[in-house]
Image (tube, rainbow, N blue to C red; front, top):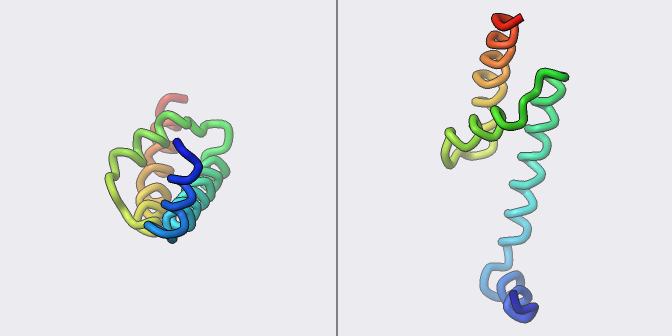
Length: 83
């Protein structure tokens, strides 16, 4: 992509895009880290990604709630049954 197009996009057309993208990126990194800490060595990145994608477009707080209240307990239960 042409550098001048990027500069124009981030400064004139959509000045909040980079900030919004980074905010979402940091929220996802934080959520993944907290999920990894909750599941420890039993964390499955593929299952995490599948779960997040099946949630569709959710605000960060609702996605966090879904992961922590549904995904983590389901994974722990599934792993306990397979042991």
